[in-house]
Image 1: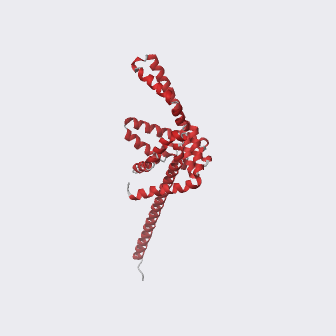
Image 2: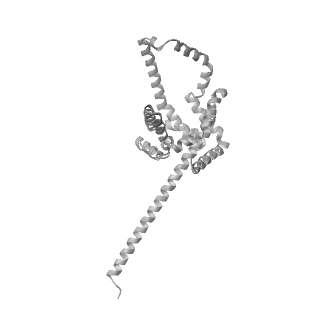
Image 3: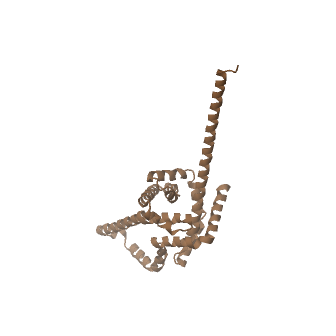
Length: 274
């Protein structure tokens, strides 16, 4: 990581800490709402209370070789697995993705609950379709190889923010814009995520001891830093576009002035003074 990029990442995290000093509990309430609605808070509790039962089922499964299952039992298992997977996919596409869109964008306004559920009221079908296509694209590339899947995932790193900023765009325009802006920056996004790796590890191991609150406790810091990162990129691009526009206008004005000067010189040559 070059020094300039590292300095920027440090500033983003520093700004995020400044915001959290006054808005942490409001932002935490937003994250906890999402964790409750998605069931994330109950995962650790389930594993702790059912640990012995899960172990016994696992042992029984190992004691019975897979080849001893009848064809009817295999079909039944596959049917239940397919139904479960289908239900989870529908929940992800129709509910979880839209809820996450609202939670991520609520950090624009220091955890506004009005934004958390906006995706269900406004532009719902567009959000569902765009994020579903992004998920499918990442999944298909991951099936080929892990690295292309990771690369594709970082192509949509700021997808939620772009959907919020440009609700008038259709799905193709949104995905094309996000991927074009990610070109040459995917490694930067990956490095930015790596800065929070230690926080994820701590949240994972501490979660079972604090009622599953490990990740929700650190997510406000991570999401606030990511929002500041996106906002800074938008500002840089807008400034670059304005500078390019000014430069183009200046060049155009200079060209017009040169043409007018040349035309004036030709007129003077055609009508010499007495």
